[in-house]
Amino acid sequence: MSSVLRVIPHLIGIHIRTHMEYRGALFIGWIAQAIGYAGIYASIALLLARFENLGGWTWPQMALLLAFHLLAYALGASLSFVQFRDMEEKVRLGTFDAILVKPIGPWTFLAFSGLNIEYGGHIALAIGLMVWSVSNLGIDWSPGLVLYFLAAIVSAAMLTAALMTMIGATALIWVRSRHLFSIFFGFWELARYPLNIFPLPLQIMMITFAPLGFLAFIPTAVALGKPVPILGDWAGPASLAIGPLFVLLAIVHWRYCLRNYQGAGG
Amino acid sequence: MKLSAYPAFTATAFTSRLAYRNQVWSGVFGELVATFAFIAVWTAAFVGRGTVDGVTLPDMVTYVLIAGPLLNWNTTRYIREVGDAIRTGDVTTFLLKPLHYPALLFFNQLGNNAFEQLTITLPVAIIVAFTVGLLPPASLAHGLLFVAYWVVSWGIMFLIATLTAMLAFWLLTAFALDWFLRGIMAVASGAIVPLWFMPAPLAAVLGYLPFAWVSYYPSAVYLGKLDLPAAGLHLAIGCVWLAALAGVLTWLWSRMRHRLIVQGG
Image (cartoon, rainbow over all chains, first blue to last red; front, side):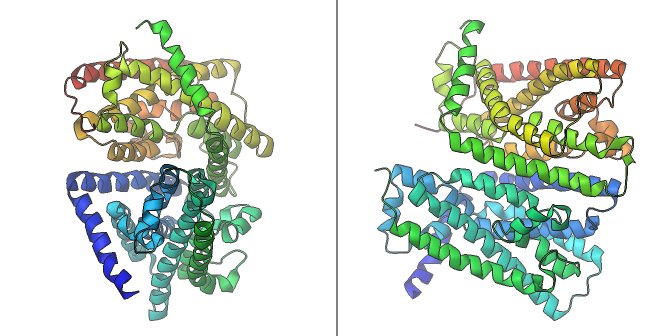
């Protein structure tokens, strides 16, 4: 275990040094991605400027929701998205077999050797938007609420990484799994709006089968003291438990897929 | 190469997409979820309001489908494919052939886009029409004008995406360019929020830029928000933008093919 922990910083260091060889492209990418998201957020801001609120959420509250959504996603996806999106290529070409014979767990190797620092633009925009919204909301930040908020971000990031791991791992038995990311991003898009604006069946789906309601809406609503549909007072504890719970599910799924992996290329 | 030979690229692009059926159903699902998300957003915005600035909720449901999946097609795949061809050097294989590369891209993308409209947008439109309801064109004349606007919209979107992708000849990456374009299109095309709901000074500026002809003007004409003389005038302005962008692409292409740096092997 300790040898694995010693290897992880080296894996990350090698990847960062590779990216820094093309630092111009990296910085332009950060700025471009931040502008890409800022365009969508500006549209939502324009909508709220005309209609005042969306399902009872004002623009500063929506800004906090969007910032939480982007930050939790970026933290989780930096450990998982590109790495597991490319799993089907690794399976199809047989390069995943080379990872299996390395003296380190394949998930650890994939996640950390590909730790994606291209999410810097996402994180900078999310933190900037979060600081602005918090300064405009007048939330009573007790130590308990601060701890809850930070833990909820970690839990939501764990949820993101767990879901992406499960989708990527599916390629080990199906060979193809990239199309499942389209479904993930469909629900991910919904998750940037207040859950209460959607029909009840979709709300239920967003906290069970596709639990991306926990990615931003539920923790933000808890922090703002807003009612959470269906979960009510359980929303706070549930938003903290969902990340670790899905990590356990992802571990089980990953191990099942590894056991049943037979290769597809070579 | 004769122009009559190029439609073969359209047919090839269309049929080659048939091989990836998983992409179709996941694409339909993703588009359906995104469309219903925007319908839910507008439904929430219109709660307690019958009409806002002369616009009703059924207007906005129809606007969501036309301005979004129908007109503002996803250019990411296209831009990144062209960018990759430039970065890896694959573009040289096309330069060796007796064809015009931008024309090849045009006919190829026409096939890809026709496939997506038929297999993704059409099923989504049918589901939305039966579940939520879609409005017909404001009049027959508006409907006919909309068809002309659709052609202009597609042409402008293709030219903007191609110009963006071609900048990879200088920057050697299309990744960042794609994200820049996404940010601009989100606001300036009116695909998410129509210009009639924006502050007047901003709407006035965006109303003159070519991005507005991709989503906003065609949708506004379909819904009858522009009277026929204004719709005709704006169609003419759209054609001027189309010609100007085509001119810029022609000029840029004549310069770019002389500065190709091949990095791949």
